[in-house]
Image 1 (cartoon, rainbow, N blue to C red):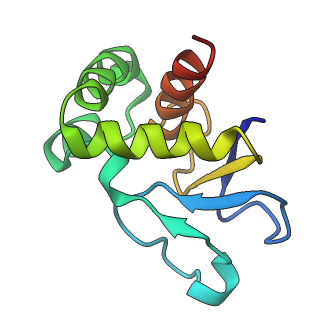
Image 2: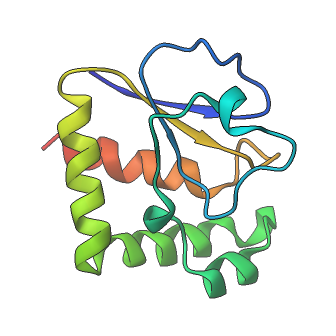
Length: 121
């Protein structure tokens, strides 16, 4: 199947698929009922230090992308979560939900790139 990125604030809760929040911090103003999540995978987010350094600054995005990909390639827990997402995507669409305002420069884009790379092998 596929991975789809959706901003949790913009999308209607009826998007079909396995809905996973991929932010470390719960999005403000969204109730757990309204989010209609199947899972919350905090473990796959960038480390706090990387997230704070990046600070959603578009000029730092390429460097952030490389650093986050490196983080995703390391650590047993992150690897297990990536495998779980790949397995889920074999049977259904996986909706990756994030809260960042910038839809061109955020960790969700990098995570989807990594998942697409893994699933294409």
